[in-house]
Every structure is written in structure tokens, then in C-alpha cells.
Image (cartoon, rainbow, N blue to C red):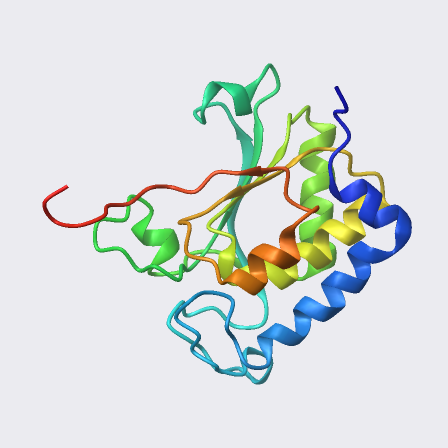
Length: 187
């Protein structure tokens, strides 16, 4: 069984960086999720998710409370991102997802965080609520891969990505972990 993260092949061929550049253009007329706000996040406009062009990180740490296969012996290298494209009224991370408590970082700093989690013994890099930051995350993964990141990428999302984003992430994300919210009020 090959345990090499899927993005390594894309990194070796230069395709990972090319995808990061193509995805960055998606921020000019945002349609990262099906809400398709079409705001220009690069000029400071905010859409339904309330995220701008920078990436907001609430916290990054080794998480031992995730699903056991993700935790392994070293923990899941979890990076909690602020804001959210779903805005669920029952959100367990309201202070992160709705209020936006966190610190703005660039792709270089996010890459450094992934490498630090790897050095701490993380089993994977687990991006929590990543959808609205997909272009910035891909850029950070491209940078981190060039600097030695070799952990699988977990996309721990609400499952509300646009089809172009899902296609762009093919070969980058190793584990998709969408949360099932609810189907209807009678479920």
C-alpha cells in the first residue's frame, strides 16, 4: 500500500503550484461554495462566509479527540479556520465560525504551521472548516511540500463545496471528512 500523500506527485511535477495559482483567481469572483456570492475577496469584499483574502486561523494543535483512525499515536495536526460558508445556528464552534476569533496569516505562515505540526508528531494535517479558504490552503500546501511536508491532508468540512473546488482539490486532499448536518427538520 502506498502511503505517500497524494499532493506529493503534484508537487514534484509543478502541478500543485499551478493549481494554487489558478485557484487564487477564484477569489476575484468568489464561487468556492454553492452560495456563489461573486464578491471580490482580493479587494476586501466579504461574502456570506465573512472571509476575506487572508486566511484566519483560530488555533493549531495536536488533536486527540478526533475520530480514532485520524488520531493514531501522534494526534491529528488540526488547524481550526475561522468563519464558515454554512452559518449553522447550531454550530458547536460559534465563536470561531460566526464571530471569527482568530489571527490572519499568510500562506507562508500556514505552511510553517503544518511543518511544525509534522515535527510535533502529527499523523496528518487536518484543516477544519476549510472550504472558503481552499485557494489559500492549496498555496500553503504547495509551499509546505517544497519544504518537506509529507503528511496526508484531511479536508474536515461541512460538505458545501462547489464542484470546481472539489475538482481542483483532486489529488491534493487525501481524506474528505464532511460533517452531516441534517437533511430536513423531520430527520
